[in-house]
Length: 419
Ligand code: UD1
Image (cartoon, rainbow, N blue to C red; front, side, top):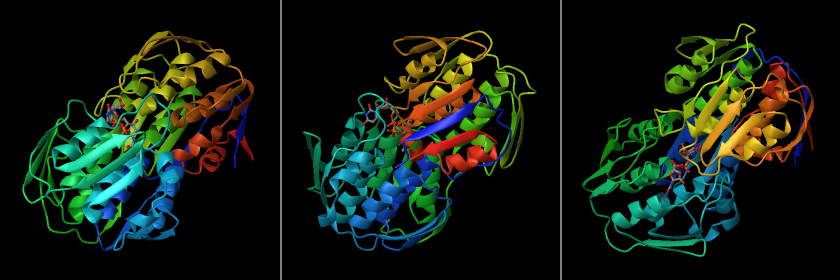
């Protein structure tokens, strides 16, 4: 098991990086495959810990999987619910998406509540609301969920009191085969949700309104096989752009999609970066200048993503001026702050606000990664810090960044892993 990364800095982060397929698209699309009794071919699947755990879990419940590099061939003709493994479910948040497809295929399910990054209490009430609302009998106690379909699922209107990516996916999956029209209001419109809808529609589903606040679903009798390519990862793209910006470098991210990074690119431009985009690449050039700090408020898409908040906190730490970040999605996504302070950053943290007073330099220290985006932020910090940075509990980074060491070495970073 890889335990630590050691980075010698400061490094200038320059070069080219090929962006991988999106984790947050790959996961819901894989869980969608549980609804389909035919072979599906999915391309551009990143090799990540959460994907590997999902595939292990699928194999345990009888699903056939072939994997060749970034292509997965999946066949969920048979599902054997007896082989359910609770430990794997507890390791990832995405396992919540077992609920809807297994209920449809097997009529009942008993499972542990999912795990995932510790970003504060992560409730599942919106998932439960959707299922109950459509006629699922569901009990949820002592971290065990027991659910069954005790009557025919009925048509209805789902109105989310709050936007949730995960619960929007659950509501789509449970509605696919319901005979009448289902309307989902105040749903999320992240690009990864649109990608999942595109995939399901390619398999024969009738889902309308993608990218708006209201999705309408007309039930179909079955879904058929298809080939599908996953969207590029916008958070991985944003992370490499920030990496280069904070080191005053220039970088080209290719195999990406600039259209889904508008809020991130806007903040990088405000920070002083020169940005060029084409269909599938983004070029960033800092022209050797120090970044200007930027104010940020995280909110659901199309606004600024919470998954880029820690990386921009670091950007603000070493930029010119004072800045304010408001984290509106996760109550405890602040574990990077204590570690950045150890490295010399000047940060104040009050409730959901992060106030940074930019310093010119940060310094290598021994620091601890507590979750995925904290881990990558500390790696970026190590790249620009003066001296040696040792990052412990680095494994979190493998949940969301494919070939991280190889990609960083290609960018000429002095980084090594210690097993
Ligand atoms: C997904 C992403 C994650 C991203 C997050 C927000 C995946 C695999 N993960 O996570 O990378 O950071 O969206 O963009 O796609 N909430 C409730 N009740 C619920 C569900 C959620 O109150 O039943 C709350 C959460 O605590 C949070 C907010 O709603 O405050 C948004 O969470 P949600 O959009 O559901 O995030 P995830 O789907 O878990």
